[in-house]
Length: 232
Image (cartoon, rainbow, N blue to C red; front, side, top):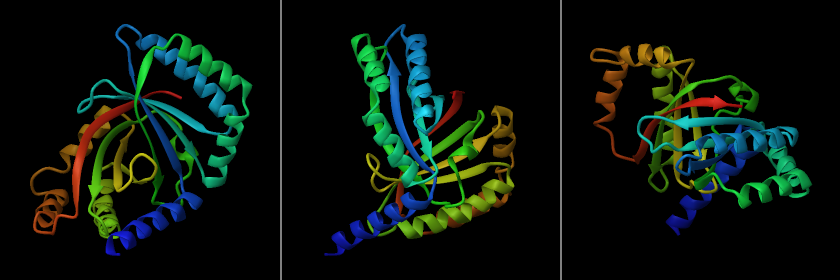
């Protein structure tokens, strides 16, 4: 009964955020050897179609901590916008033709797909226009501890933003249940470096980390990598 209650709480949180928040859908691809340019061209064609259908599209290349993956990322302002794009895609001859062409001569393999919802209801999909450098931490939360983890994330957010990061926190949905994606965004690599230098010994961040080490473990970090926008 307790396990069912925890699942229901997590699901309700996801549905509530889904209604009002920035929604992200991520498709992770890996190019076949020698096919990276062709995969980028294919993604650009897909992006043109998805944009016409109402999605905000960005293409992000993984860097350190990953294995040459590329994120094809779609965003919407809310659940209604998300559903409208999905319905448009279902009835789109242009999308069917594109997918048939891509499948006949594939340039890469999809490694994973998942959805996440921003826990900040004021953030819109259009807030991500432009190019960014990212540092991403993926956390697997223990059952029933989602709200506690969000509180810790929000405490850390204040410190990280003072150090120069833009912080966006996503609760996982389809394909990433019980996951949170903690994203630090920067204008360029120099900004990332400057921000990280402010979090060294004696900083508010180091003090926060020391305090966190004394708290109960409620989540496990499963991945930590950097990425950069390479197309929209």
